[in-house]
Image (cartoon, rainbow, N blue to C red; front, side):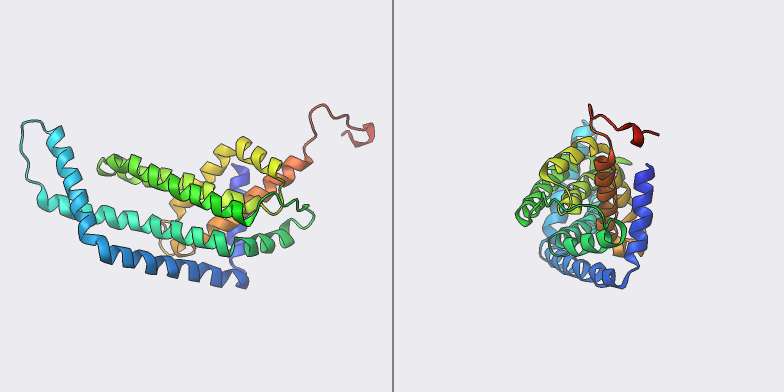
Length: 252
């Protein structure tokens, strides 16, 4: 947890640099425009689909009792769509940032905080695109699987955070260390630090709902994962290898 706290603190510090300001704005503007267009085109269909889903759920759970909840169902459906749009906008901005700006953010962080960390370039642009595609497919599958939970209080609030926690770490962990870690080191980090990466993703998903702070969320997400991943990589390289004989002069 100390590593996560340090990564978050350094992310806020790095975000104040002028080089990060434009990166905070343009991916979010593009994502807003994209999802505003989608909402404009498919709003009525999405509301009708959710209303039908809720009516089926109420009918199946109330057995022989008939309930007329059409007005309430429409209101709830609109609220659920708006709640779902916010993380989708954040995720889209995150994907845009990961593809077009993450390398600049890695360079910014590395030259200030990890200048001695060797670059072994285990990742690639193609790998980054593939990782983003896997994250997007995972989001769709997890979102569909969690749909029934969105109409069950308080799971309607917990489910999106749990899903976005996974998506955040899946999108960002690769690009955070791709320049510095070898392919084997990346596999080791992702395997041994899986729960820590996920916890960081969940914390950031929660921070995205904080007013004003959510506007800067994509860049903060990226910076936090860069700091966390590079610090873990440095620590992993400094750890003694199992079976390695340490010279007496280096012993404490």
